[in-house]
Image (cartoon, rainbow, N blue to C red; front, side, top):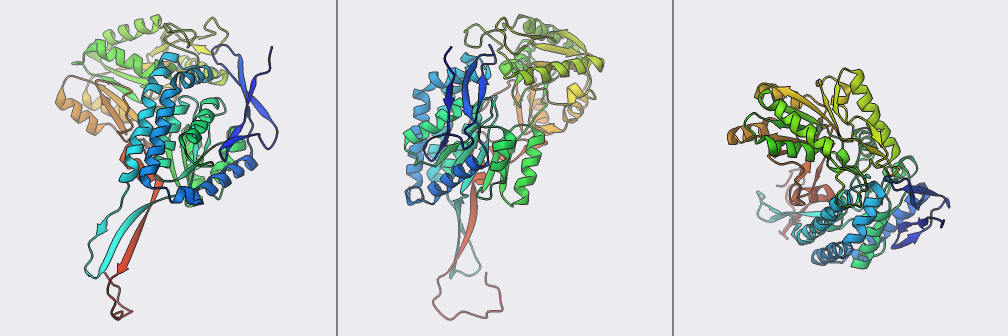
Length: 495
């Protein structure tokens, strides 16, 4: 057998071997086959990447580039992603086990993120502020921060990297990315495409490796102006503390335990499909997974039957096959974590209605059956803590007030789903649910134009939309005295 290919860091516009000379394997979770070996980054690799990013940021080639030209580069990068969509989709599917058909769908829309921020690049502007003295001009400008660090997860590497990279570049920053050690390949390829698009060397850098060896040195590097992270709440908390200690900004998209609520007047067939999409799509490995399902007692049995029946029929297998509906979990430890939570639920008194077993999918991989838990309540750890797998806990409720209290009884506040045909109720629920995103009669809808924010332990800051530009710029207020006469009383503040 041939040796697996080796992937280097991408620093200063070119592939760069690791300082340590060490590499680590990345395996296909569907088969266990090693796909490649990635460079094992350390603090010296991070330092080199931050230095390259700072050099690119300070260079006149970048500083003097007009905002419109930055937009052109982002549009070209989006176009290159579209041109290489099949390669990128297949690579990511092999790396993390996502269905190839889902990845094709993601890659069909991902260029829109870059196109959106391409159009926004020359709309970043300040204001003229009225003052009490008309001889004094006061205006504001938004400036780029400098070097932005981005730490991205394994479940949707390209999409979640784009949520950080596109607005950061749009605002005029340069970037150092530390992707998950489980999914390095597509982010490295993205950095190559950025250079091909015309971004100067060092504008986009990637250091691969593990959190403690590469991620923490990136967070701690004094040359960083901001850190943007998507991942677990525990890690996000540590990053927030480190960023606050150095007075730099942080944008954190963290965990979730999202409620998906079905009222008695809902179209139950559609709601059941929404529940399945919310928890079993992507094998439940999404921060917005609708893992807590609340069904009105009048439709509880029907919904439970529909969801359970569909869960039993979900086709598990090779994520590259067109008819597969559920691929593997991304790596063995994640499968074991899911299994341990289902075992915990059993010990807490829950009943497994369907699923509840690990399987190799007939391929020797890291699969877990779509699982429905009943006889559960909000006090169980398996219902309160993020599992990040295909496990739905389904509970009945009787009143609107009751389900609002249950839905909000969580440390998280990332997303929520509501299924109802009552327009007034839809608006009431949207207002009362403690979540940054509320979907009504749909689930997992997303757009680069729509801002996304986590409440409570689900995060800090905004991603997507025009609001996110504030996360990647600093505001400067400029005062110009247009009066050439003598300066008045120096002991009186001027307005």
